[in-house]
Length: 319
Image: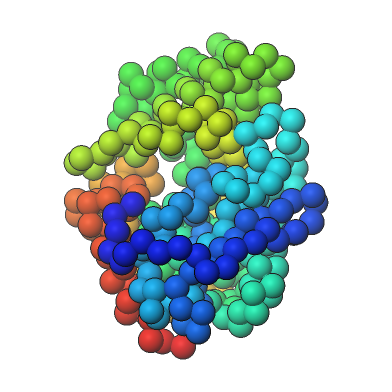
């Protein structure tokens, strides 16, 4: 993630017991008296890395970062195939965000989310609009079945050879069905070799469908077999279940965001998550401003991080 402000370390951190045997790792950095903000990472399963901290002016923001259930430093870890994912849903994550807000004594906060984190941010803000002061979302997604079908099947029109390898990673009888569901079953296979092969093939495809902007480099996190497994398990778990959202809810209920200022940042070259969703959301949410970056794809490169920083700077003095 490109940096704007100097790297900083947290001044407080902890493990919050959110129930269901889950401990969520959180940290706060910046100015303890600054404007509160919370970061919702993507994935699901990517975890909050130190680069997120550098997007905020540390003199003006009190930044809260946390690893969503099952990933990063939260426990139990989804890379363990024996870890039950039944209590890892969108509703559970929304409840965790609220519990963390109350635990830290925050009244209202700005919410920054990217990719899956943008979907989660929208779901949270629609459920708890009074607790959200602003929204800054980039690589905007809405967690629809249509988006999941695009990511797992229709994107094969852009990367035909790579998609064919991805499809052929599941048994022939399942290749015309729900590929996220098929991969989730492979990731639960009793044979470790089957699980590892499925995790690698899933993550190879994940790294492929974001590779549309100039200068894309493979994500080095996928070199780690533990990260591959947790990412594959969590993403397939959410996608096979339609992100645990009623179809189209986040766009259909965008009116709940009325009065919340927002900035939507999206790359014109984001083929993984085409700009259509960000545009539709901007039409339904009059308080949001949409910026399309002509040379950016999915993620923070090619000028995206700089625009995120600018949006956060603009909101920094607003209470």
